[in-house]
Length: 216
Ligand SMILES: NC(=O)c1ccc[n+]([C@@H]2O[C@H](COP(=O)([O-])OP(=O)(O)OC[C@H]3O[C@@H](n4cnc5c(N)ncnc54)[C@H](OP(=O)(O)O)[C@@H]3O)[C@@H](O)[C@H]2O)c1
View (cartoon, protein in one colour):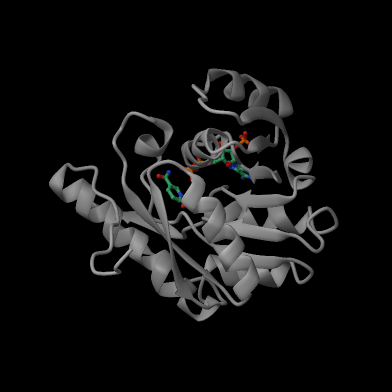
């Protein structure tokens, strides 16, 4: 089974993805700017299943077969650019959303290339970029008993890469993979996260994305 590294994996988003990957049997490395901190965080995670979560540096995480970017948007490009060599030839999954808080709402920001996935693709010309996990609520992801039953909208210009990530997502408990299409959809998919979070703030809820009518 392939290994999965998560850059910025010590945050709520990375931890939630890590726990559900480990439940699906994957061995996951939480990457951090501080390997000690990542090791400490990894020991706090209530992992179930055949997989594991360990901590390391972001460089350690980048050695894994597949790598997820889970840093804040304004540090994602610098983080991946420094890891271009270990990420060479790999599939890199971006879950990064560029959002700003305005009062009770989150609003999307649009990076120069239209999306964070495109920014990351530009910084990593030797890697294949896939977008996934943008709309997931981290707290429910981290709690395996939360009853989460969410869809993960996936995009990439590489059909094999997006299918590969979809197969991985479908093994994670509580998640269903939905391939949306190409990188052209990155901007609206990332921006929609602002809608999801704003709805939850307004309605004091923990809703998530579940698409009806797909027939599977
Ligand atoms: N939270 C959610 O529900 C959720 C859901 C879907 C997608 N996302 C996206 O996932 C990403 C991470 O979200 P999060 O809530 O987990 O964020 P976060 O807690 O603010 O940051 C995640 C980790 O990134 C590292 N980091 C922070 N500042 C950094 C910097 N300047 N340079 C390099 N690394 C830095 C930190 O790890 P170390 O200090 O250990 O290095 C931190 O634990 C965001 O882009 C967000 O839009 C979040």
